Image 1 (cartoon, helix red, strand yellow):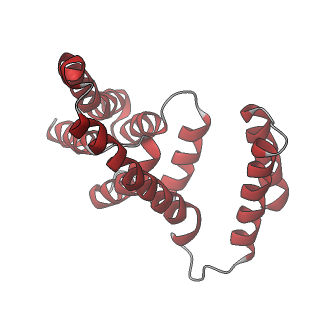
Image 2: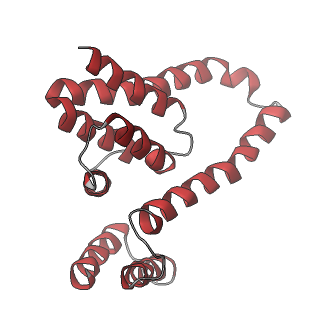
Length: 179
C-alpha cells in the first residue's frame, strides 16, 4: 500500500508542475519513473509513444500506463488521480478568483511572461525525448530520419493545410518505412 501512496504522490508532484501541458513534464516523468524503478529500461519511450497516440492528454495517459504497468489497476487509478488532482484544484481555485483579477495588468503580464518559459520546457522535452536520450551521438541516421519526418509534418500542416490525423498517419507510415 505504501508503494501506491508513493506512486500517487509522485504523480501529484508531477501534476503540480505540469504547466504548458503534458509534453512539458515528459522528461521529469521519465526521471521519476526511472528513479523509482517502475519501468524496465527503454520501456518509457514506448509507453509515451502509445500514450501520445491515445485520445486525451499525454501526461494523463502516460501516468495511467505507468501506474498500470507498475501496480495493475490500482496503480493506474492512483497515478491518474495523482496527476489530475493538482490541475483540478488549481482550476477550481483560479475560477473562483479569475473574474476579480481578469483585468489586472500584473496578472496579464505574468501570464504573458510564462509563455516563453513553457515554450522552452516543451522544446527541451522534445529534444531530450526525440534526440538526446539513449544515443551516443546526435548525428545518426535515426536523427536524420526523425528530422525528415518532422519537416514533412510541418510542411504538411503549414503549407498544404493537411488535417492533423492525416499528418499523424503519414508520419506513422514514414516511421515504419524509415525505421
